[in-house]
Amino acid sequence: MRSVLVLNSGSSSLKYQLVDADSEEVLAEGGVQRIGESGATSSHSSGGRRTDGDGRPVADHAEALALVVSAFAEHGPHLDDVDLVAVGHRVVHGGDRSEPTVITDEVLAEIEDLQVLAPLHNRAAATGIRAARELRPDLPHVAVFDTAFFASLPAAASTYAIDAEVAARHRIRRYGFHGTSHAWVSARGAELVGRPLSELRQIVLHLGNGASASAVDGGRPVDTSMGLTPLEGLVMGTRSGDLDPAVVLTLARAGWSTEDLDALLNKRSGLLGLSGVNDFRALMERVDAGDEAARLALDVYVHRLVRYVGGYHALLGGAELLTFTAGVGENAPRLRAAVVQRLRPLGFVLDEEANGADRRDARTISTPDSPVTVAVVPTNEELAIARQALEAVG
Image 1: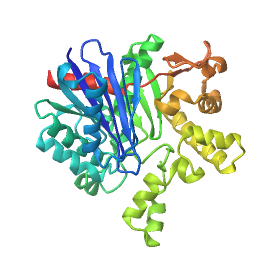
Image 2 (image 1 turned 60 degrees about the horizontal axis):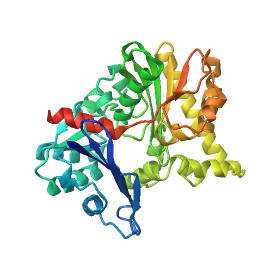
Image 3 (image 1 turned 60 degrees about the vertical axis):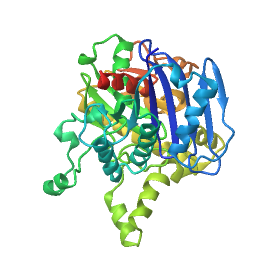
Image 4 (image 1 turned 135 degrees about the vertical axis):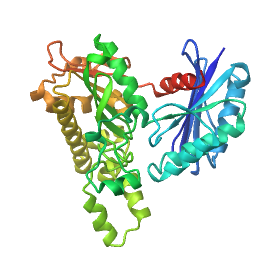
């Protein structure tokens, strides 16, 4: 049974899936959370059974990967019995690379060099890649870049209005992120509505702890909310999103270091900075309890979403499909309702019963006569990475 192991290394987590290369069935999946913290959590699911770890500390991604291999050996399927043909790694920032790439020492060095543009993500990815290559040096390891889908952004969308020579010297441009998800969901959205991808104008909202929007015309992205780094754009769990650059200058003049500013904007802003929580379910619980800070955080979150969708609607010359995906987008019907109701003057009409249904499949949630179709499409980045890893190794 040919298979691909997909590894997704976050700043303090390691998620994985083992995917059958031919049937695309998920043979096993799991993850290790809170790496480097006092008590890690882990789980492994296979054959309809889930096993949770014992909560012992996990020092780094190398130790986390060893824990994953032990879980496969103890709970199955054993990695020696599944004919692994490749290991696919999600890498957030790929710079100018637009294709899945077999990882060499030189490629790994490039990924590490790009840490300055994605400090929360590329450092963790590089650590996970190094540990996985040491563990299985006999296998090809493939990097699949979150920036790849947006490598063809029009120059008008990818260019910042700063000194052109400075921008070129420091590789400053809008790269875009969550590209693996946006590519998958835009293709699945076209299938859902029975339209050729090449003829469809659509907006995709990837809403999780990290969040981004994209405008996709005929299968090609024409704009996206994230930019040089995953910090720009929508309000996120702990990230600020769009911000007047003078805020940074003001704090720098007040004595804030670059490390302080980085921590503020990436780890202490967004929903967490406004309300004290970054989990969307906890936020809604506080809203329901009458917490004014939580209500303001939700209002700011929705305001930013509506502003982006309205702008992309105009940019596309009229979107035909709006799709919600990822953890919040797929599981927060009240948020979807709040956004779509604000967009009703532009032709977005919600079917409240369809939106509120407890379902996990791809589905439309707009009325049959809505000028713009609204949908929920679960993302599947792991399967997309597995497919691209197979392509890269032939």
